[in-house]
Length: 224
Ligand code: C5P
Image 1 (cartoon, rainbow, N blue to C red):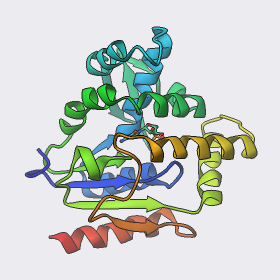
Image 2 (spheres, helix red, strand yellow):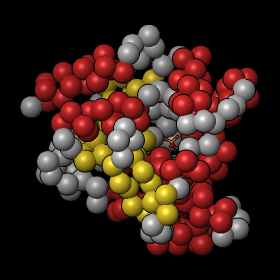
Image 3 (cartoon, helix red, strand yellow):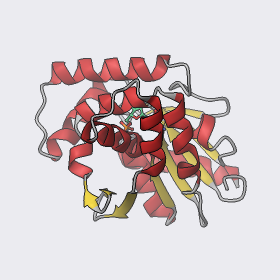
Image 4 (tube, rainbow, N blue to C red):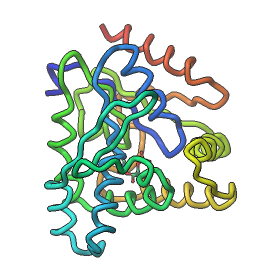
């Protein structure tokens, strides 16, 4: 559990770069990686596939508990497998991000994913990224980072990320979708997106990924 296994919790809004930073840090440290957003995206995907309504809370929570999800490390990213099928590309669309943010506001869904997320905490350590890693899932994390950047930069990063994956969206549309999603994530009653007590806040605007990773590694070294 998190009080024995070292955990670095990286939270922040969409496009803050937390996924990239978490992956690089986990690779440098040879630690495990948890992309918690992917779990919420898979719940949204299952809901879509099984035509579950957003108010069918019991079925959504059951799906979150029972879904057969596995992560496998690929070259430069993680592959997400649902019942053995590679759903990585499907999950990355902004439509699934928005759907994930809707199911993520349901307390029973969050509860159903709690133990699943905590099970990722294994030696030699875990780097976990999301919205509530430091506040709810790993409150005893060794290091908590709240990563952010100005909205224009976050939209630009997310746009580039989608483009690299062959997904073409207009900047104004993406900007609006991201703003809506962050507003929903920050204003929900359960586990809202915000810097938790004790988190190191890092505005990564204008910084390269390497510079951010270096900063986080220095903070981690300071904890030991
Ligand atoms: O990080 P990512 O963009 O993949 O997350 C998708 C959505 O899942 C977020 O907008 C948020 O609503 C939800 N999420 C969450 N808690 C987490 C990770 C993601 O509520 N720890």
